Length: 426
Image 1: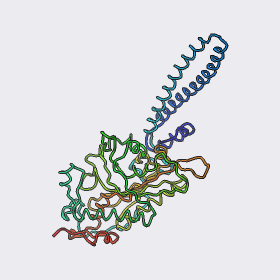
Image 2: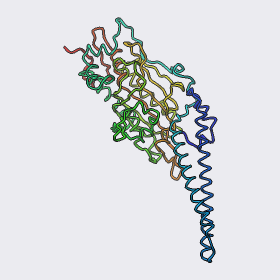
Image 3: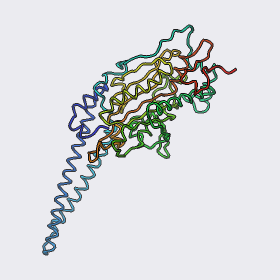
Image 4: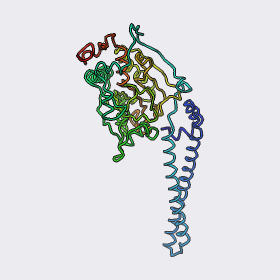
């Protein structure tokens, strides 16, 4: 979340940066500042009353020792005590209101974030060969049916729409992709692999910014107040919640595979065919804790690590910097990686790589000590999908399909899959 000292000292700058999201947050910031002034005034008065009470208590003691009447002072102190209780309650109520308001305030975008909405997103670069087709490429759901690797009807029978089933070569292909991604990040990029819970607490969801903003998009186990993770970002980022790390622990680089669960509230009718928009999907996630001065450069590194996988899979892709109106709630800067899927003739997002500055760290209490005896600072957090599986698989199947209905397997996957081609069952 944003800090109160920053709101007090840099009110106009914060409002200016938040306006890049396409909304005027000035009234919200001013309401928070008004609540803060009221809270601080109440606490100042409490301190003055407590000082008065301490002084009077000494006077009451003196009078009693000398046999003098102190009833007037005792009566005054009862009133002072009641006033302190009321002011303490007022300050506590203001604290709750301020915290609630801060949790609903998004992160400030970096100045390099373009202004405007989705239409103002900027393509940074495009890579990969443009294939010349001698036949009309099929969408992945038609390929999946012919190859016997995608069972949409079976998933619907089990769980309803948005829960596809992969079979045979499709299941093996997904497992191969997950193994490739994890091996690459661990062996080549130096990440530590972690296996995390798929149910997390409300505090964990709040720490990364999913709550309260995205409660309607999340699956909740109400009886235990646990939440199915929308991304491994949530448990991985919170692994050190409330901790004070030594400087030599940074950068901390973690990678995890997990299923992800999203209700996608309000997304009905949008790209729902096949694997394009589902409620459960697999993803390999990258998470980094960085020193503030290194976080922007780390975003370039993290994004390049995800791009390297797309290069090796032989996919055409582009990097897009998101405009303020399309920026995630907690993000200060995001690069989306989109692959070209020739069967559906669309660019599909397969990775979102973001730097969150200290926004998540303040919510989750992620701090480090720069050097012995120095004051602790909040880390900067980053994460990125590397990669999300459904759309990566869709693009891979459509890009590498052949005129006989088979799909060529990229060389980098052949050792994992044990074949160079996916064919229909005989």
